[in-house]
Length: 67
Image 1 (tube, helix red, strand yellow):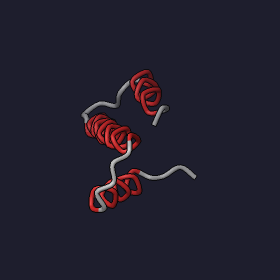
Image 2 (tube, rainbow, N blue to C red; image 1 turned 90 degrees about the vertical axis):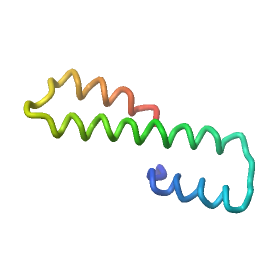
Image 3 (spheres, rainbow, N blue to C red; image 1 turned 30 degrees about the vertical axis):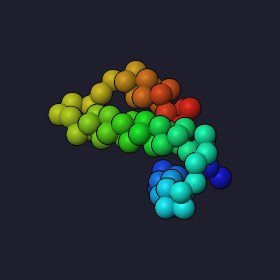
Image 4 (cartoon, rainbow, N blue to C red; image 1 turned 60 degrees about the vertical axis):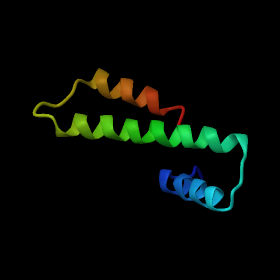
């Protein structure tokens, strides 16, 4: 199974606390930032007065595929 965002955040926290430096850590940190930005976009779409077009959801989905 794929790790959840929370799992990745815990992994980074543990690595930072243990003072572990790996190249993949920076990639994971970048991915976490991207995921939070994506979640924020999704939440904003859901809170609008009007429902977004299907194409907006499709676009957001395409962005999330690489996560």
